[in-house]
Length: 119
Image 1 (spheres, one colour):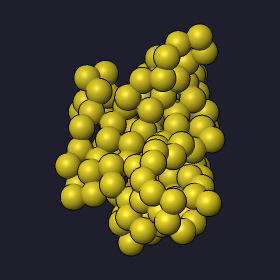
Image 2 (cartoon, helix red, strand yellow):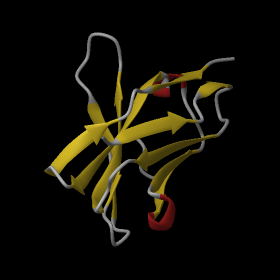
Image 3 (tube, helix red, strand yellow):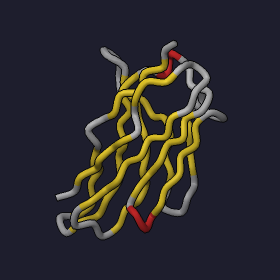
């Protein structure tokens, strides 16, 4: 069984920073692309950023230049450094990971972590 556990969300003032973490655990053979998505109430989940196992990153236009995704392959962990936060960044953030286990390869999701940007 694979679990993705997120941490680091919370309340921050506009212009502030937060760092999200997501650690994968379980019977993992390999982790391929990892990513962060976000979802506002009543809206579809949208891509924030992804990073391949080799470190190639991809960002949504709305966060380009403000957010940085990184990963520590030894710890099976992906991070999202969020700077210059705006009120419109207030949503629930989810991590996901494309993982190979004994059962095969599939995408797993974390439980979500709330980020609130408000003065």
